[in-house]
Image 1 (tube, one colour):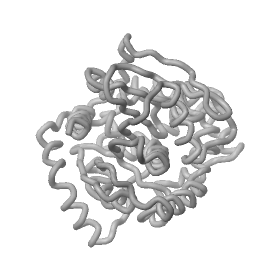
Image 2 (cartoon, rainbow, N blue to C red; image 1 turned 120 degrees about the vertical axis):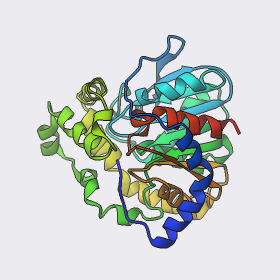
Image 3 (cartoon, rainbow, N blue to C red; image 1 turned 180 degrees about the horizontal axis):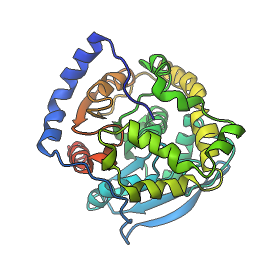
Image 4 (cartoon, rainbow, N blue to C red; image 1 turned 30 degrees about the vertical axis):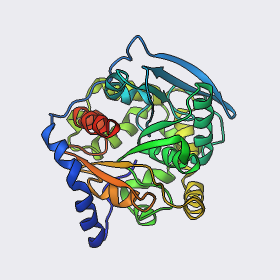
Length: 320
């Protein structure tokens, strides 16, 4: 959950250049803020799939080229329903709940993003899927990069939304941002403080990191608060996903040095009240073929705040 960091002037200029082709598309389809957790279509099947040390809850629907959708903190795979409904017309959509989150199991370890990427490869193998495009947000970006860099031959395209990557580009500057105090907000006493107050915690993220807090409606907040109130959910988010960031930074630095930059087409999407066009600059440190898309009237919660804009950008990029 990252937002509003400082980029040098040279990088801002590069980001503006990268943004030109696709930000215009976003402007054409600008819509009012909108949030609603919709039910999954009846044709989507879901199952607990075995991974290292536990299971991941995975939704599968549609037919055609495969697309994997990965969520972040404050959401679950449920955030992707508006996009999945459209993609399922001509794609196979795979939507896991990340390790220790949503309806997935709660193992104590294995939260390094390279390990989670290997679990994703196991899931795709079980489904008989050799190649897939990735659409990722927040912590999902980190798992997505770890997959794309380790399995470049299996990754056709990558759409990365509104969060940078541990250890790369301006990550160390981001760690000094007071908005990310939650990275080190963990431990048994913290979990006792949050227990029964998950909604208060999540409201902080929805309110501070959105363009308009009213755009994330009450049913959406209640839906995710209930999921994050499940046993071990906060423990795995804080002590698992967040706690692994330091190790992820080391892993990413090593992978970039060994594997080089990604060469598949990448679309970096940022909310104009959050990363905006600057996200393309950040991802450009890890990939050579990066374009930018900017979502207007949106903060970090792009799929909740402006789903129509996001769907339009993503489907256009996947359809090229």
